[in-house]
Image 1 (cartoon, rainbow, N blue to C red):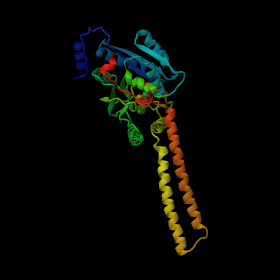
Image 2: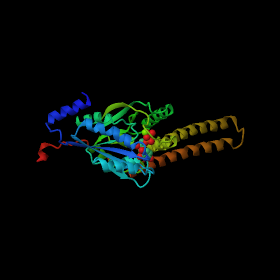
Image 3: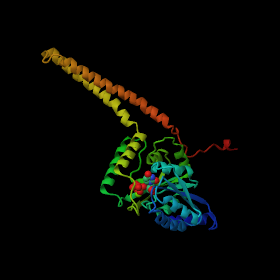
Image 4: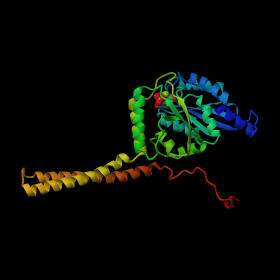
Length: 336
Ligand code: UDP
Ligand code: MG
């Protein structure tokens, strides 16, 4: 069933008149120095709203992440012309992850869809996502089938990151799925509960769980302007992502310490036996090597133990909820 078919099907089923609004959806659009993209974005998004029909009330929530160009003025000008645009101005540039979170905290729709203003997340996919949501999905991921818009180096480094991340993180993130997704309000509320300051959205999105459905699209090149992500910024984001989602980098040292301690004990025994059997070649060599090895191993092991505590402190201070309930069915006796 195509998206519009599902929508039509549901319309018939619920026997509502065309003009009745039954659902609301907020598009969260973080913008940073995007004066060149705003009007093309609106031109592309509006027909999608019209196609989906009047039953769904759309709100476009721009989060201006400290732009220094005409972005704010252009958005306010557009908002004066129509009633479905809101704007949040952040006091300075906080980065896309923070801007997106600000949007999630202020979005009022029953579903939210974060999308980029540069049209790399094609608005046409929205109707598919909404159809799945109306059919019951809590999360709809938009997966990039191809990365036409990205250079070879970018796809290569992105794939390497996903592989390393998923090998270490407690909750894997799907590769090829960006921030362009649909979240039901229930999921948004769960995401808002995650209290950590250094945020890596993709990991948080998968951490909260809920079964995700998927739609695919081809990711085009940027419509206008330039990407704000240098490789250095991407590298910092990757580190944030890994260290925020995994204590493996700390834990490694416990195991390294144990292995080193045993290896050095074994080697010390060899040196000790050799000195006993064959005598001393260089005075002091045996005792020196044994001391270095034993203390080296012990140091690493001790660091590992400290790492275990640091990892636990980290998990505690993040104050993530201990569980998230998807649904609760009380027995009929408790209902009345
Ligand atoms: N963005 C933002 N704050 C920043 C950097 C980017 O709000 O510090 C916005 C930007 O305006 C765009 C979206 O995040 O709407 C994605 O940015 P970009 O296209 O530069 O990233 P890429 O598509 O290269 O990952
Ligand atoms: Mg982009």
